[in-house]
Structures are given as C-alpha cells and as structure tokens.
Amino acid sequence: MENGTDYRVRGRVLFVRMPEEVDHHSSLEMKRQILRLREQNPISELVFDFSDTGFMDSAGIGMLLGRYREMAAAGGRVYVRRVSPRVSRILEMSGIYRIIGDWDKRNQEGDR
Image (tube, rainbow, N blue to C red; front, side):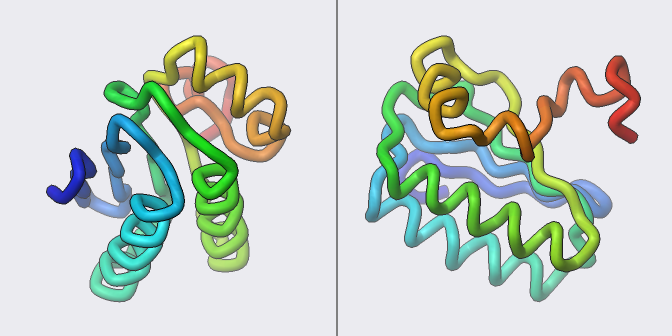
C-alpha cells in the first residue's frame, strides 16, 4: 500500500482501494501498479473502491478512462464502488457512469 492505495487480487478480480486524494502523482502510480498486476494475473474485472476518497482531479478521470479502455480491449470490465456524493458528482459530470458500472449493483442490474 502506498499513499493509501491498496491492491488485492481475488480470483480474476483486481480490487483497487483508492487513496484519499486522486491526483496526477497517485494516478501515475496506480497506472503502473495496475499494469504490473494485470501482467502477473489473469484479471477480467477491475474494481475501484472509493471508500476513503474525498478528492479527485482530471488526472484521476483520465486514469479511470485509460484503465477502462485497456480492460475493454481485453474483454474485461471496470467498476466503481463506495463512491462518496462529492466524488460521485465528479464521475457523473465526466460521463464515467455511462461506461463504468457500480460493483455493488451489478447483479441487481443484470450486469453479469
């Protein structure tokens, strides 16, 4: 865990617990770590957990979009979970919710 970010692989799912602040620096490190873990494990789903996140800038949005593109190209999926109202507004304004689903609601919505 660095800067409050934690990575856990469970089966074919990579869970990324996001740091308190998702900015340029943390986004670059997450990109590197996710790539490394995807190279070492057969990941088909990537889940970003925003439980501790209170701030995210455009670098965070870019990081999410980049991971979405990589996972989609490999036939995988990306999800978010436990998003605070403040961060949710940022995700809504950026259009992220149109392409990335809610991990906790995926079974209810027939997303699997």
